[in-house]
Every structure is written in structure tokens, then in C-alpha cells.
Length: 372
Ligand code: NAI
Ligand code: MG
Image 1 (cartoon, rainbow, N blue to C red):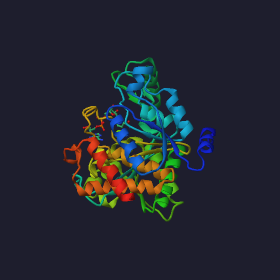
Image 2: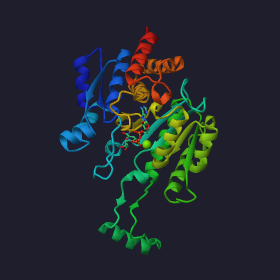
Image 3: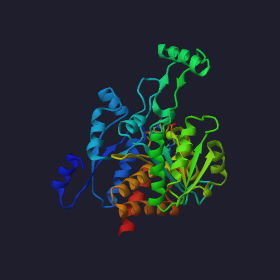
Image 4: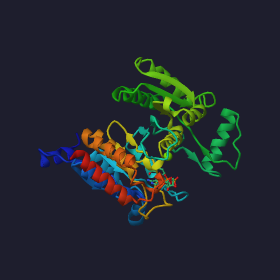
């Protein structure tokens, strides 16, 4: 246990609050983060939020979107709840989200999509979890800029080594996938199936085309699967998987995907259950856990009080389960189901006219009613 945490426990004993880093983020982040704090407070679970600005407010005050204090805080508290953060395009800043996953080695993204009542989803009965490898693949950050001296040298090497002439007006991104990196996410996925009473892992890949990157992912997964005879295992080409997800999504249970396919298909799965406003997520490593909605900072609706806070609220429920507060977590999930089922309060993405505050009021009232 980290010294900071042991100290905090000593001070507060016996009624221990959980210390959790809260990164409100930017765009709609601060709005849905404040909403989430209220809903969590209604459960009575004591959280000592350590608030850390990142993204646009940090760029404005400190010149960087991810100051060291943010990482330091997560290293101390171990767990974080994070709002979305804008990735400025073409400014030289890398994605804070990708940087956090790499710095803290949060190698597994877990994104459940479960049908809920009262949404505009086209299906009910969907209950899939995307488990996405979070550190390798085209997200590794191995990039060569068009016209750069490095790319000139790489082009020369590729001509010799691969017999391929990269056009001079090309930019290049490299896709590494290792046995080591794949094995840990595969084991994580199979253990997840066992821990959560699920049945089957489906791997999506294009090992027919990318034989040495996706091929490594597939063969490593298949080899590990042999050690889990109690868990079903199937593999599908990712394009085939995409089609089956929008025609018969009920047949899928746990999807195990390399980084980029996982990014794309987790948004698709969010769409299956009513959209990004409903989709929670977790980024997990051996040491740290960062919970965050799947959606981004939604600049088109930021600052207007209309964002749906449910994705971030459900991310907080995942956090509560993770820190052992399962009844608080269940109280939140039940409140979300109740409010959606009643259908009186619906945000605009759900076809209603309610704002973030209305939804938050409804959720906190439902949490209290459920516990009362
Ligand atoms: P986005 O998820 O922010 O928005 C896509 C669409 O969904 C928009 O129409 C938006 O209004 C809507 N939407 C998203 N969340 C909603 C909510 N809670 N309630 C109601 N409607 C919601 O994706 P976009 O526009 O591609 O990205 C915006 C920025 O966010 C970019 O800079 C991107 O890099 C960043 N981003 C950050 C993520 C993170 O922090 N983990 C994840 C995804 C994107
Ligand atoms: Mg994404």
C-alpha cells in the first residue's frame, strides 16, 4: 500500500473515506463531473475527492495539459475518476488520455454496454463488454511526420527491408503488437469472464492481412484460451464482427480487441445501447485504475447544461465496485434504471428536453429513495 494512503487511513480510522483523484477535464467534463459528485454523495459512500485540473484549464494556467501533479495525485490515491479531455489537433500536445494510459500502464480498457429502458436504442437485450488493449498497436505513438529527416531514413530502410517504396507525400504510423502485451490483456479478459460470471470471449482481428501484428494478437489469445477450458472462445474478422454487432448484438458477451479496433467498436457498442451519453468505462492496470466515460468533451454542447451525466455517473459506479463499495454501486445503477424507466426526465440525446441538473436531481432522488 502507498505510504500516503496508509497515512490517510490512520487519520480517519475507523470510518475511512476513499481518497480518489477527480479530474473534471474540459468541455462538458466539469458539468458531468459535478453531477456525478452529487449522485455519489447521495449513496452515503464517503469519498475524499482530490480535484486535479487537466486539459484546457491546465494549458491556460500551466502551459501543459497534463502537469506532473496530476500523475502524482493518481500515484498517491491509486484510483481516479476522470472527465473527458479535448485533444487539440495539430498543436503539438499529445492526447492526455493516451499519455495517462501509457504513464500509469493502464493496459486494459473495460467498457460495458448494457441495454437500459427508455433510451432510443434499436435493440434491447444487449449486454456486451469491450475489453480493449490500451498501450500498443497504432496508439503506441510511433509516428513519422511527412517530410521529416527520420521518415526519409525509414523510407530508405523500408525500400531495402520490405521492398516497399513509401511515397514522399506520406506520413507513417507504426503498429507494434507483442506477445507480452497481448498475453496480459488476454489473461485479464479471461479472468474478467470468470470473476463476472460471463461465458465467452470473442476476439476481433485482421490476422489475414496484418499477419505479424494482428496475427500475434490472435495466436497469443488462442494459445492462452487453452488454459481456460471453462470459458468459450471464438475469433472473428473485425469487419465481420462489426456487421454482426449491428445485426445480432445479443449473441455477444465479452469482446477482446487490440487498441484501435477496441476504440472504434466500443463507440459502436455505446450506440447499440443508446449512445455515448450512456457508456461508462474503466482503464485498469496492476497498480492504478482510472474510470471515465467513453465519450469526449463534446465541444458542440459544452457549457450549456444539456450534457447527459449518466455515462460519467455509471463510470463512478464502476469505481465504487472497484473500491469494494458494491452496494453504493448497485444503488447508482438501480437509480439510473429507475429514472430511465419512468421516462419523465430525459436529456436531449435521449429524446427529451431535460438538462444536466434535472437529470442529476432525478438520479440523486432515486438513489435516496432506493436506499431509504
Ligand atoms: P464526443 O464524444 O465529444 O462527441 C460526439 C457526439 O456525442 C457529439 O455530438 C456530442 O455532443 C455527443 N455527446 C458526447 N457525450 C455526450 C453526453 N454526455 N451527453 C450528450 N451528448 C453527448 O466526440 P468528439 O466530438 O469526437 O470529440 C471531442 C473531443 O473529445 C476531441 O478533442 C477528442 O479528442 C476528445 N475525446 C476525449 C476522450 C477522453 O477524454 N477520454 C474520448 C473521446 C474523445
Ligand atoms: Mg474513442
